[in-house]
Length: 421
Picture 1 (cartoon, one colour):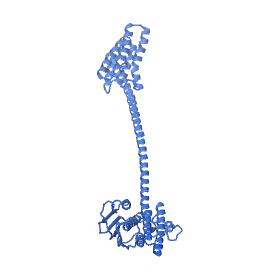
Picture 2 (cartoon, rainbow, N blue to C red):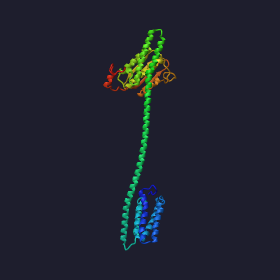
Picture 3 (tube, rainbow, N blue to C red):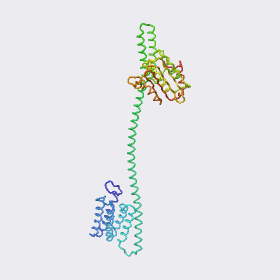
Picture 4 (cartoon, rainbow, N blue to C red):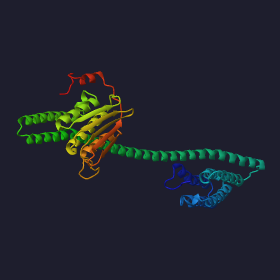
């Protein structure tokens, strides 16, 4: 039992009770009949309890110390009862000490020894052995019952203390978990925000490259051609008209990119038709014939799928015009059961894959194409060799188009009230 500064109120009470149970009968006994022996024995009992229990609480926790303590205390209590029966009260506290200091069932041995001392130490006064045995058994039963209740109260207090400690530990763990969760949530929010910002930056970079950058490149090409044909006013006028049309188209595409809208070629046509329009415009601008063939059954696809393949076609054609010096280009759109593939092949000069400065050496156009295809869990393949032309193949899942609400169909219909201008 803990009897130090951190002990419970019950433990401190059991430690102090022997002093009261020795002092009270001693005061009454000495007030009626002063006997130095009585005072010496009472003082000795108090001093022995102080030495073994109060002065050094840890000493009484050893089994040998408990046996010695009880043996000496019972001897002193027996001697006091022999002098005056008022000290039978002192014996009662030894019942309590049995359950307070002796662990487990050994406490009943202390109770039995205490009851034997109380019965044997009292003067017989003509009592028969049966009466002595009866008094002994009654003392043992009463003390045992009282001890059981005392032990139950003590166990309940210990359980309550353990529960309080456990609740405090659980509360501390929950508080730590809540703090950790708050930190994780803050980090997740920060990462999600950063990922959103990075994703939007990448989207805008791809859109700027596929619209404004390509448009400006084409415009510069037309202006250089116009400078070359300066002696032919009709040719210059034709080039300038083409520049104006391309500038308007680039401006329109830039606005749609900022607003995250579908590209203009896909706004009112399916992918196959849009590719034919893009190829025809590119042929008029570059003077290189570009054909579009479709295999399989064309079906409406998800907007992201159609936008990805359209941008791949535009970037491939732009690279062909810039680097390939091709005589013709062929685009093949293949609708299959689970995937849709776009192949763009030219008969131009080709290049060595991975060579520094080559079109396949890591320019942003190819990076943007690969990012678009990868976002859809697709695959982008490039085949080229010097003098053997270039082939770019993009394969993506054939995700069907989402149903379009009537209001959205009306907005996208030609000449409708919601048509973009």
